[in-house]
Image (cartoon, rainbow, N blue to C red):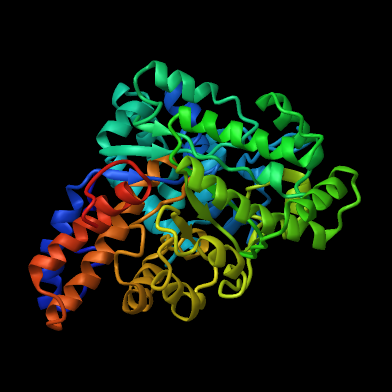
Length: 478
């Protein structure tokens, strides 16, 4: 895995702790990457085509970057972000790159700058600092690398030392790209690139085109989704298809963490209202909540690890959504409650160790108050790493400080990068490994943990824990 130029990047400044952290980080740095949840397009690896120009690779699809420039008045179209209606956007990669470089100062102190600078250096071997005056030189250096065979996606996958990468697909996806990966020896059960079952577009009645999506779900599964029973059968059938394509987990991106244990008759009435177009916002929330319990039940049957990513207000920037669609930086975190919200699901399945429910949050306040005590008190619960707006060195440190006392290390999953940006994967994992090395070094320096246990723990966090939690095999002593 590539390492940063500065060997002490993000390590503690105190000399004694820094020396300990160096030793611990060295153990973590040599571990393969387990990337159990993310949004890399599987076609990238299935087709293994050369990457496009530097702007199309690094700027256009990265909503962390385009969002920041929008906040300063630069419209996404000027950065090449496609529009929903097909209206013109900037297509000249060099123009996009120059425009981005002119606003590079906006990213001072942000994780986006850290990730991108280390991507330049460790992935592309480019050490020219990004400035308006150096934009063309940097663009040319990266473009030259992208023309080399060693910078094709599969070659980089090997160089990044990725052992397993999970992508994320809808039940409506035909999984053709994963079939190609399997045919090439890269995918399928136990493969290097696997899929994840993400059913939001057929579960959330407020999702645009939900009822039409449910019809398509029935067609894809060969089931009659005109009835609630047929709908559940279709979901089970698609889960089975995903498992056959290598999936080991499902993922659920709900506005809240609410769960609800309805009777079949109550759930059927809600479903029928939705299908008739009569469901209101309360009905949609109740159906989402009930389906989380239903999916937990399915996980007991088929073994998929269940992930819950709640708390995002989707498409808050309505202008951005109307012009450019979903997942382009228009979402905002909200306060999220877990203790009462999860109670119905936990009452039914929380003490069953066969279920693995991985919880994430965009509400940092809940780490100490709710999430760590919950994970420390239920066999089924595990805590996922800080994600999205919280995926930063500072929050990763605070996560360890606030969660470890109640939940320990082994009720967490290790690092989960949850990224669309393929080239940032090794950088993000390296950042997490450095932060964990610093935290463990402090415990050793304070005589709270012997060095041999810290050494075992950092390898567990970097490699063995995510491998085991997400059913990629591994060491079962954890």
